[in-house]
Image (cartoon, rainbow, N blue to C red; front, side):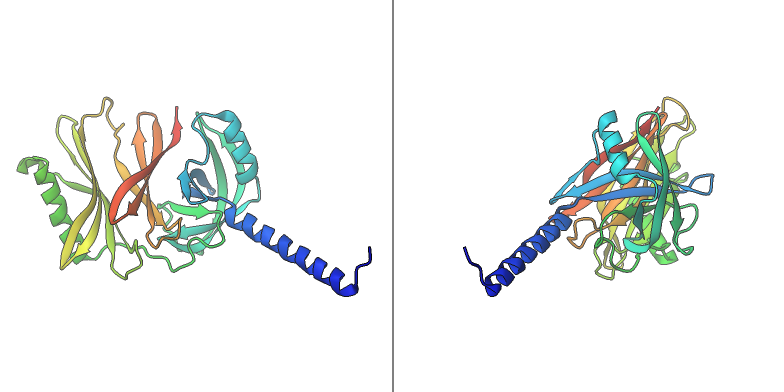
Length: 288
């Protein structure tokens, strides 16, 4: 069978196009993994895998307490020398380079050096990810202004009063954290905060809040409230903001938080769909 030079050239061009498309499809279907990067007492930072986004689905990076899956994940994503993009306030601020990984009580953790040019306060956590596209926008995170803080606190007191909190306890209301971040890129700042009221008996009233701008003040967009007494002092289950990142590219950042427990900690991830915030996933950090 005789093939002309034109036919050979056409066949080779077709093969090249198919090969290029196959590479593109592979790149598009490669999952995005999100990590929480936290400061430690040492020079390196601690890295936990908290989310995998794959073909339009959010899921845990691996099954809890499954050593085989943990090992397979660590070999691929926690290998020494791996580099990931570092984000803060939903935007890229630097990178991390993994140095090692180890097994904790029931989970795997990595250690990494970070390069952020001092853009992340040393006491705060951030997020890192494996995508080439996620976080390609300016960072959007700051402390609230005095006016914003005052407006949010009015809302917080209303929420506590609606939960039948006595006025005597409201006087001991404490702000654990309050952060301003533009979650949906509309130029208006949402507020994410954690608050607590402790009684003399050791009982706690914990509040986690996402508040959205509303005229001159704020309105509740998401509220998680718990009233309880810890079985052991200081082993509470308060929820604290970690950071936000638009993982799926829908224009609204997912909110990442951490939650403590008795000799344990975990991560909660929240997402806004159809105008409402809801809990997307709960991920085990570790439990001893």
